[in-house]
Length: 43
Image (cartoon, rainbow, N blue to C red; front, side, top):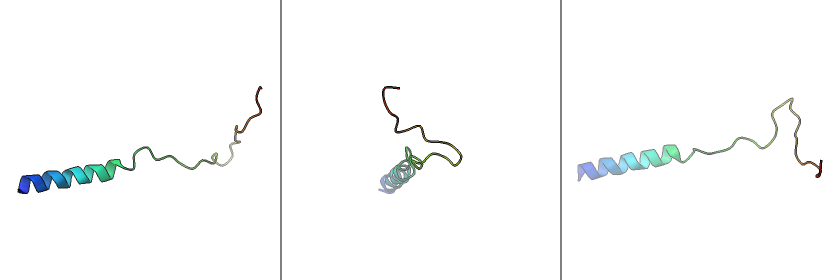
């Protein structure tokens, strides 16, 4: 029973830490850089 609780706690801890992976930064270009989008096509 104790082993199951420990494994469950470990699984929940891993799930919480990995849930933030893949988050993206702001969609605005960094300061001093010009945005390339939207463009007029064809170029």
